[in-house]
Image (cartoon, one colour):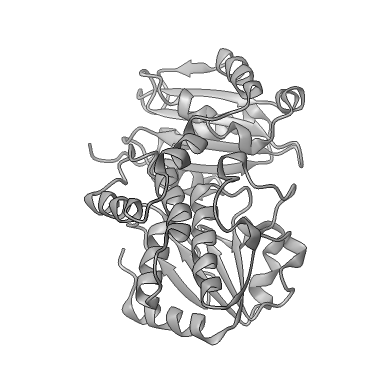
Length: 335
């Protein structure tokens, strides 16, 4: 999905019109949301702009995997984002509800620039830079920087690379194209420590997580007849699990990457109880045969074809019944 030239031109006009810019990404930010936001924020700050960046969920803590990224000093708690920003730029956020407590800034802002790559984006901006063919929102940000004539320095490249490796699964997912590798090469040429970035994201965790992983995987359930015979594997992370381990929801995102390795299941699902509100945060992954993005949209969520999620107000069994029913009629993708 190519972004129309008129939208690029209008985005450049908006960004040139404001000396102060508010940036926001979705609640519980992942590497692409946070990396994209920090990359543009750093580039704008280098121009002398005043930049504040945030997300609307509590606790306001940077996930440990991203705690060494450049630009963290741009981050402020949500209540420090102006109530009525002149320009609000959102990243990797498909709808206003995903902004959490910052959702009200959309209606209050003078202009809203939406930067995203979710095909399900509701296009809530004054201007929408949405490229559903991009492997990550960070890819859209790089094109924007190029069109603005701004240099992708090592400081900017590190968060961009974080977004790129996060949403391509360290270049394992089907979204990895020749253009993705070309961009990665360009970023490496700036001198970033890609090995350190990847180690922090994929290969570093508290020992409590290792113990929790054993507990959560031991209760995994394989249902080979589900998903039209393609197979479903699922497990849950309870509030008690998090309380005992001292971990946060953001610390257990990697559980699904272990679960999805099950040879007998096309679709993997992790149901996590959010300690803050008691709701189930459901993550889904497909190996390539099923469009879980469409499934999650039907259940009130969103995401990509192979990685998506939704929030459920029901208990685990009711949520699973709804999910199984949706998966039974899910679109199958060509091999």
